[in-house]
Image: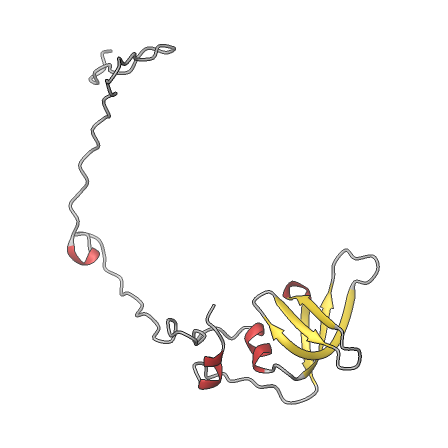
Length: 154
């Protein structure tokens, strides 16, 4: 059976030879289909686009939906807390309890200071189980309030 494609490829193990100043011919790329305004292709259903969140791109403000532990800990900076952690596969201590003042909280860590000894603890969030407070917790379920604007966005 004969092939309808012209044989422009060399036989197995043979390479085309190009002389000085000659360039190999690049194959022609197929034509791309025409583009349509609005990104809508004919014959395909249109789905509504989610409008961009107005608070998501405001400099100096956290996006509305970010009710994460790190942000709650930041809102309570300076308060005394008890932090319960678990360290898997640790033969010396599997679980450890830290008590201290919240100095800072980041995406992946918590920094506590012990007011009695002055010692500081850097606790990776991956080990954090839960936190207890001896006083009322600062938490604002209606995000986007002025108190969150002092924290940098992610």
